[in-house]
Amino acid sequence: MGEEYKMSRFCMSPKSPKIILTADETMMSKYRWGIFVGFSTCMPRGILPDWFYFSVWAPPVPRENGRALYADFGLRIMEASLANVFGADEVAVVHPRDLKRVAGDRTEIIGIGGHDFLGINPPTSEFVDMLDTGPPYNRVKFFELLRNPVMREKIVVIGGKAAWQLADEEIMDRLNIDYVHLGEGEISVPEMFKAILEGEKLPRIIKGKEPDPDEIPNILGATIHGLVEIGRGCGRGCAFCTPNMQRLRYQSIAHIVRDVETNIKAGQRAICLHSEDVLRYGAKGIPPNEERVLELFRRVASVDGIKDIGTSHIALATAYHNPRLVEAVAELCYSKVEDMNWLGAQTGIETGSERLIAKHMRGKALPSPAERWREIVLQAFGILDDNNWICAATLINGLPGETTDDVIKSIELVEDLKKTSTLSLMVPMNFVSMRGSALDTEESFNMRKMTREHWQLMGECIDHDLRVVPRLLRMYRNSKGIKSWLLSFAATRMANALQKYVNKMKRGEPPTERHEISKWLNPDIPDLRA
Image (cartoon, rainbow, N blue to C red; front, side, top):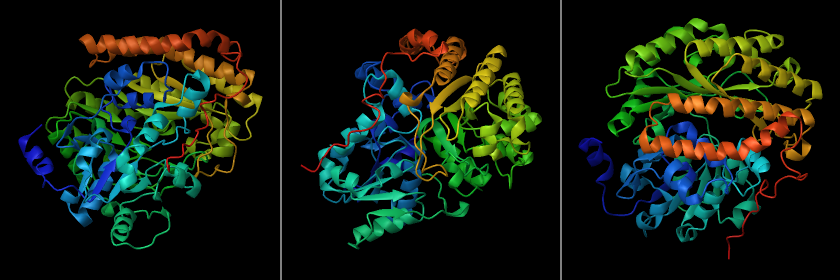
């Protein structure tokens, strides 16, 4: 890490800051072997020993003077927004283990961000319900954070993607939460914190305002695995999804490059570009703006010190309709970034049923009609495989209105994908009714509701993944020596936990004799008022 970065960010005044931003330990990890290992925090306890998991798989981010050197992107954005109003010395991003040391008499507000506070979102709910070994790590560590004595002394504000889970005054009372902020916060969080510090009376649940791109500040500190946001919103209109409810916006390339440079100066060498469809960066509608996408990758790849570029999400329909763009992005990255020879991303299959695509996510196939969804999926994976894109592809069990025939079509699609020898992973998830989505009045789907066909679909997906993972481990170039052994050990341990269930599931049988949902599925909200 450069001395200039250390001096500018961490040689701060000895007084404690007025505002501390933090998250539970699962959100404040450097996730060894890559950012997508972060999904392992959705696992239930009981598969790996806690000491092993939090020292090997999800060790804490490095810290200096009590400040986190790397942090979740959402915390970094809030840090920058608040620093613009209160000054950088008055805002600190802090790991939970350092709260007692950093929080002082001057500290008045602790803001907590998170993606799944109660451990009820996908894929947490699926892992917990199926494996039934204990509560999920994210829930355990969130409650542990709230039990920290410092929380009783300060004003506690919750925000982030999962804030909706806690937007209930009874839950807030039990957990000693003073305020919940819903939605984007660049404008409204500084206003809210200013009002709190001035003693104004506010509603306990506050809805944020959506900023325009020029109202989103550049980050001041580095992010976990160099994640850099390039846009918000999606525009395809999937009814089950919450990003669909956000207005589609993109940051400028200059803005993005500044965030990349902040990460590189802090010692990061890998950057993950984040939006709901990176291949549509800068688009005004569904068709991508190929020149802007390629210019973005050119500019990012040219930043001195960068060793790897990743993408968070891509849409299969974009890949299918724009194969030359997929190829051009891959060629640019592989030629400009030394030793880079594959790209990773998340994507969504969701279902093999054209009927459900038309019902809940017609925009997912655009500009083609929903009736071509099967062709889109198969051809898109062929294009991605040809250009060394490796994806984690989700499928959803239990979408509202789903029939047995719909599930069978998903099974058939997965079987056809397995025949292509794709290295992409298939990630089956159960439908979760999330507040803010167009389906938030529907019932969530769980293990108790699963039919023979649902188990077959899950079994086919897991069977494929268990065959693919060893090949991925062999090609993952950063896994060497003892790190490679530890990764292989933990992956083998988890694979063994699943393997004994796979054959039963492929026959359409539940993996255990249990007929009820896991007792760990629904959180027991502790009463922390005493």
